[in-house]
Length: 122
Image (tube, rainbow, N blue to C red):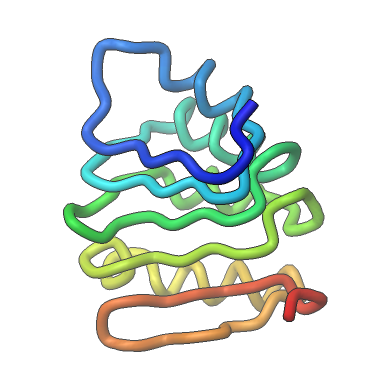
């Protein structure tokens, strides 16, 4: 159990699906990582049950299965998602469309980032 945040950066050689599925922490920061369908599905499970804020991208791009990420109900524990840099450039449109379909709001949208939040979040 994590009481604050975890950074995942260029992780290989471990069971990332099990790690993501079991996370309980405030912030999850993923950079320089490629998440396939199963890893993205595990991220969604973490958003449903244990991770309150997710940041993707930054130093290096994060590749993920956006269709699978869009399966997040928006009603779980996670109430805040930010994409940075190349990751934001790649997935911004899909994230904004997803957010609006779940009654979330676009909180910040700049050249290098895009943040969406649950409507009830300050």
